[in-house]
Length: 505
Image: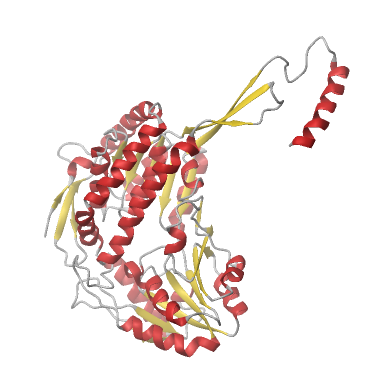
């Protein structure tokens, strides 16, 4: 196994303690990185702030060129990155490939869209001809980015790239379990021409370095649990800085009466078990119209049982390992709780230590009722519950009855749009699990209700890293009117002018 040395990409003091990264596949070492101490973190913010001031003066076109070169370097290093992602997270190679492709395409989109979106733009002024008004988008400053372990390339780089395009510096805190992929990507960004101190990585436990990042950042982007998101939102509110977050989900998939089961069954299996179910937008609840219940369940269970589980970085595995002991324990406890309270295990339901320390079989449950943990709580693992619905309307209502609203999936030949308009969810995929909406990079992605604030992707996913500024220059006649004209005469002229402007605006 390759042991990766990426210490140069992490901000730390000489001689700092080091953290060993072990692969979930077999607990063999993947690499080690130094931990970021308090002094090093202070230095990171100071140097990043200085670098940002110079970067802000760099043209939009030159920023975009660096990002395009970076996207090309990602492609050149594809296989090495796929190996590292798999070794660091335990995910199967096909899931790592989804993450890789998304990162390349999003980076390209930001580089292509950013210059036009962020340039100065003329706006109609208060008075035609007399008022020249310009809208500008200024960078926030130093953006803090805190990301989890499940997507160590897409999430850190996907959040950093638009912040950089908008003229900011970035202090990235990847999860302590998966810093190597982010460090490898940062090395490629620097190779593409990004100034060294403009983006820096801080490694360490959230309880130690998370709070200082929140206290020093000018904007915070967070991906993680709803509980932590609420705490960070409160801290950002105290400082009156911007905050954006993608949080938890308990995502529903609906199989309506007119669904094409030849597409719905394999699509649902992928939507539930990609990345071993450790995906914020994957499916944990499936509502099936009773008219297609029997054929759907039979085929879904059979296809789930046929999934190939394996360790390693080869292409053969349909599903890999869970990321660690905590994730395995959560899946085991959730399924055991459901089983003890009367749920039926139709597939899976047990660990697989013969394959690796954290493997758990893809699991399908039925007869799940309120009071079971899997009914309402996010499992974040390869566990899905099936529910029979008497009508399409009942399926939609049940799917929408949740404190979360991150992603939803609807399988239907004709009623997908109808269902989507009734679901309170940030993204809805019709005849697809999650990829269609997520990969539509020109459209916003984010959560309703307890699933988050703000949006990734789309114009909003870039502009959120800026402050909008209006600059208006008045010529010839002041807004308050010429002093020699008098208030009454000016009021008459102004009224006539307002009446005329209404016809043309």
